[in-house]
Amino acid sequence: MALTNADQKGRINQFLILLSGIVILIAAILVYYFVLRGVYGRFDITSLLPTKDSVEKTLAGKTDLAAILYSKYTENMLPDGSTWLVDNISTWKKFLSNLNIRYNILTDQDIENGKHLDYKLLILAGSKSLSDSEILQIKKYLENGGSVFATSGVASYSEDGKWRGWQFFNQVFGMQFTYEIQHDNVLKIHTLRGGIPLTATIPTGYPLKIATWDVPMAAEVLDPRTKQVSFWYNFRLEEGLVREGIKRSTGIAYGSYGAGRFVWMGFEINSVIGLQEDYILFDRFFNNCINWLTYSPIAYIKDWPDGYDAAAVIMPVLSNNAVNIQNLLPILRSENTRATFFVDPERASQNRNLIASLAGYGEIAALVDIGYLSSVNDTINKLNSFEQQSDKMKSAKTILENITNTPVFGLFPYYGLFNNNTVSAAINSEFRYLLTDSLTDRSVPRTLIRGENRILSMTKTARDDYEVIRDYGLTLPDFQFYTYQEDIDRILFEGGMYILKIHTDFQCRYDYVDVVRDVIKDLKNKRFWITTASEIHKWYEKRDYIELRAERRGNNRVAIKVSNPGKELINDLVIDVDLNDDVINISLDTEIIGTKPAVIKHDPGSRFLFLLIDSLKPGESRTYFIDYDRANT
Image (cartoon, rainbow, N blue to C red; front, side, top):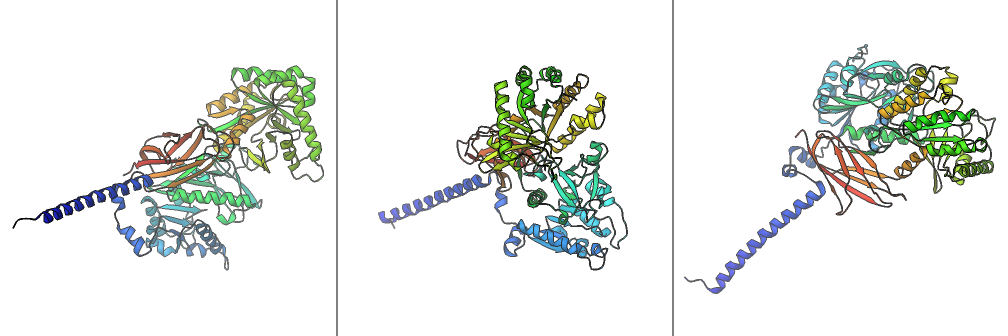
């Protein structure tokens, strides 16, 4: 039977409909693909397919959890009625809950039966007493890629409370026990180094205050797979060699064992005491530890410009025998180094030509007598009033600027200490930074804020020539240099700012001044940024305003958002990123087309990379997408 025109048109319409449907389906798939690509970067199609784990998570509510060991073996060692372990576990619960991390409590028997293998993170909170079976299971867990957060002398006793020794500690953590922190004082200062993922957003050299009631412990790192995070040694109060003191007093460490990771602290989290800021910063540290142990990305801003591991400022003070400063000038010239000279305005008026010449070797800053305090706890003496301090500062600034024809931005109180009136008066007198001899809570500068105004506070982070020569009696240049070098190495370990404060009546003497040359050469060899205090201020004025956030998107992309809410253009910004994956084939994209790209520095196979950012304008935000392939897949 012949087909009518209507039948032919119907078949043609059906074909067109089918073809259109196929085209629309393909277009939808492509749109979906590019949407996923835009959000997650590189991804494997198989990662979108359901797996056994994803089905269990969806249907049974199963998810990756942390496990906290409640060790009855440890509890049995405690005095009758002690709530030490209960209180400790309760604090861990609070910390994990604050981070919205779900957890379960496991018993010793659960560990022995391998139930901890289902969890991403195992917490050994004060678990001093463990059975041989538990130790084997924990080692197996780490070797297979698990993460452990442990405190104190874990596994140093057997399940029946008998002393086992430090075998587990040595083998798993790659350290050896050195000593216990005694009860001589209620608290012990515990210094955190900077420039590592665990101390991101924490001031370099911050002295965490730890109570000694739980008898904290110190250790020494022996294995290169383990990294030292902190030290108990207090160079200001304790005797002995600084290098050795730091090395043997590790209080926190992190590293790897097999395919797994660990963080160890030589104290319990209940032992952290102090002011509100201490708790805030410890919360940050705890969060960083959890992120590192769970392989989340961590991004932080380097303390110093690209290419430097620490900073240094040479600060000569013109005291008695001011003419001795001329012994230093040839050294500064030959080493191409600029210094920050602190000068009393009266002395400057008596040596106008000399002071004017110093401006060619760096910058001039004001040494001002604002009153006397013997210490920060002095209740007898008082500093001058706000009005008196302000008048003295303005007068000193005017005199020095007239003599040198250069702006004066720095202030150093004559006796080294200051108060709130000093800060307000310095801001009122248009100073930008002030130096202090008082002990502060970091080895990097601190920005002090008064309303909408800011001033940078710098503390003396190392021993000066008054201590080295006058107090210690070290008249041989070799001994002087070695003492300075100890502080240089300590500051380098912390990643902070080394301040060499010297005086014309001691280190600037003709027979001692060559030590300064040796110090400068040592600083250069160790990648210190040697600059003036004003340059430090300029750097921090920009750096302090940076806001940074890192977020994992999918299995092969990390998003980094960097913002500049300040008022200054920012250049030479270096962002450290720990991807927490060993990666290859890195590429960089931006969220918005036309965004100025960053420069990436990365060694193939490493989990660390550096983003170098320039020309970040005031009020500008940039989002960078870092795409990569995992090296172990």
